[in-house]
Image 1 (cartoon, rainbow, N blue to C red):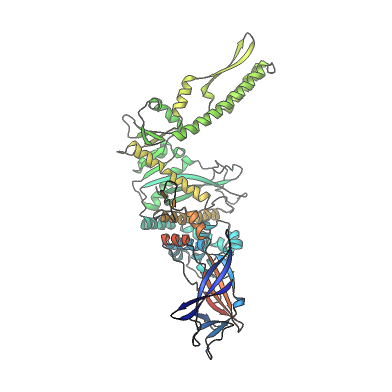
Image 2: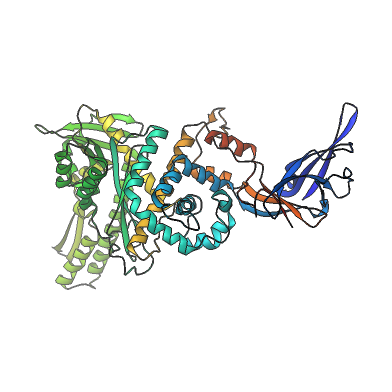
Length: 605
């Protein structure tokens, strides 16, 4: 890093402008980047340096100093002159700034700073608990990690101490754990607060609620947590105990509420609990519930009707058999290039059924069926060969071997007639596919059945509303991938619940960023070969990655009297970053001045 003199002639005079420059590596080779402009050094003997800087003395009093390179003679008898040693100017304390600054702005936009100030800052502490809560949520958005990882690796490498005004050495894993304990009791108030903010910022409505469940596994025995149990693992980790998480969102993915259940809790058994919980928090209302077939039971649907609610749900696959004739008819309505629907009313009933069929799903199920059929036929051929060669003569053993093959392939076993028959040549294994069963299988492949008590809506409208359930699935994907809710390392039940709450806060920041980006034009539309601009909005993770290259750093200017002047600055955003910041309505502060020991502008002896 060095100072560069830029000469310019103006009005017949030569003017010298100074800038602070560093050399950076780029794919095209070394390039020089200007960090900041320090001003003009003209030929006047009265005020050669036009820029002044405010510094602090040991008593905390401020004064203005004029900066001069050490090789330039300053004005005589000027007490406010500081000679700068140009060859010793350096850059220190470079730290990531952009991503955590974005997270803090989203935190303030949701007014979570005010919420937690009122909720947890009711006692004097070295660090306000509301700021520690912000730190935990911003970490979950930007670089999810454990409390120990936050203390040792992530937090010291970021500019959050400046942004949150936290003194050095005040953040440790113990303080983070204590903050989790203080946050958890305010779960219900937090959900209500976020619901109000989503409505105020984006006009979010919660008349239609999408309900789904997932699981997250625990590392360790977790003997002190009675909620952690072995159950159906959606993470494909049956070797680990787990926790079940229920999430309710609206059709745009804004979270309405969440709940935690024991790891062995069946999905179908959670609906009554969720209905009572929602009524307790938000009162009774005529809501529309959308969920998949794993939660459907007659008892659950009756509970919704009893409360005056409505539903649009998937149904178990076995119910498609009732509509076999409808599946075979050719009166489907195409609502998408690959999607067909058909509304089927039940005579004398208050419910409507909607048959749906998609080409992609049909190809997938056909491939799966073909795979199982090939496996079963291969096993039958092997058994037939064993019988023909005389290596399996015992009748009971033959029947047991055949029974095992059929048991291992329940997906396609009903498609085959299989028998052991006595022939002139001896016992032979024969099989053939049932023609009627094959036709039924082909007609139902790619088809699924919806059930609703909604009235006066077409099949297309009902299908489109049910497809909104993908927003709940997208929420779980964000929680598990970008926000890394799994695995759980906490061993105590309150800490595990608090971890889920922090992930919920991280999701609140994530979905706010997502919809803020969607409401505004794309960052830099790319022209396709056809000449059409691609104006897709940025994803939240791409926006965070783009801003993560913004750095905070200290420019250190040594002066001849032994002191150093420290300027804390943020690197100049690129054109792409400036465009994104304008879209988000976020302005990066030019100066960061929070305390005297490491403020933006300070003189250190």
